[in-house]
Length: 131
Image 1 (cartoon, rainbow, N blue to C red):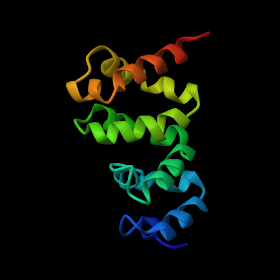
Image 2 (cartoon, helix red, strand yellow; image 1 turned 120 degrees about the vertical axis):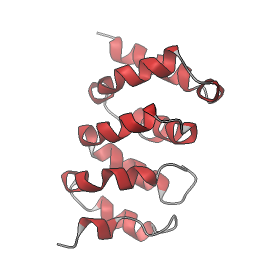
Image 3 (cartoon, helix red, strand yellow; image 1 turned 180 degrees about the vertical axis):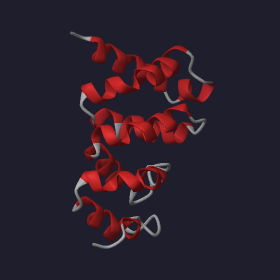
């Protein structure tokens, strides 16, 4: 088996690497999750949405990296994660993000408010609190 790092996209147009990553068992991706998250910083990059799908397939394994994004000051990255990762995760996994979601919902930055991330966080919190 090749080194897992060789599967990481080389540039924002490297869709071949994305297709190769999709063929791997998600458990194999744990060592490169931080690298994969970097590729969703700009959801307009051609590789970004495919990488987001791969991250969703990793489930709980990628939660620590997702928490880092939600705690960061990179609102574009947060926006991408809300729209293309968090929305596609099962609610039982999203529950693990509750502290970060509460922070965004209750004390949003100006840009988080402009991107309506606070409203999204509130809606997710309502969904995960339903019995």
